[in-house]
Amino acid sequence: MFTGIVEELGTIVAKQDLPEALRLTVRGPLVASDARPGDSIAVNGVCLTVVELLSDGVFTLDVMQETTRRSTIQKTEVTAAVNLERAVTPSTRLGGHIVQGHVDGTGMVVGRNPSTHWDEVWVSLPRELARYVAQKGSITVDGVSLTVSDLAQDESGHRFQVSLIPTTLTATTLGTASVGTSVNLEVDVIAKYLERLAAA
Image 1 (cartoon, one colour):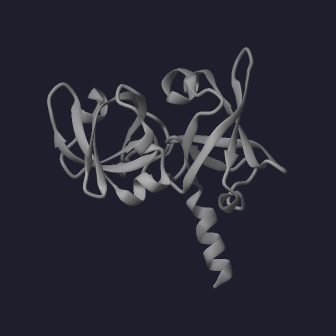
Image 2: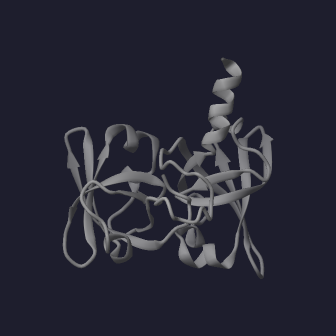
Image 3: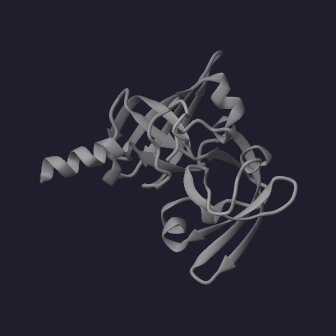
């Protein structure tokens, strides 16, 4: 489990295709500093397991086919920056919200309005996920816990707005995500459980 508070901007060092899988090599000295094989690290919001620790803060992770199908991981280029977060511990402050690292789908940055103190960003939302997203609720975008500031729907589909404060702009990949950038989305797991319970 994670909180959606990015600890470090890492870098994709290498990608290797495996049978029905993908192996990523990532550089992230901070998150690697106390990592061990088997630990969970979120990469752009995708929970992945450390396979091997190399030198200079570099580690490898395996990505299963289901994950490549639901996320942007397969399309992430070598040398690209990625948001990294270690799994929470019992004493961790829950600064964001409960994030599983189980990406529900992808969206796209469809609008960006810079201002003096923050950027307002609109992201497209798959129709099947729209019912889980509420104004002032939480959503995870590329591993970043954000508050939904507005919602919209028209003939082009569903979308939501988030406001990015200076810390988010400088400490995560969302600071440079231009219109047309694909992003990983994870909706609030509590909404999904409530729907399941109500249906039962």
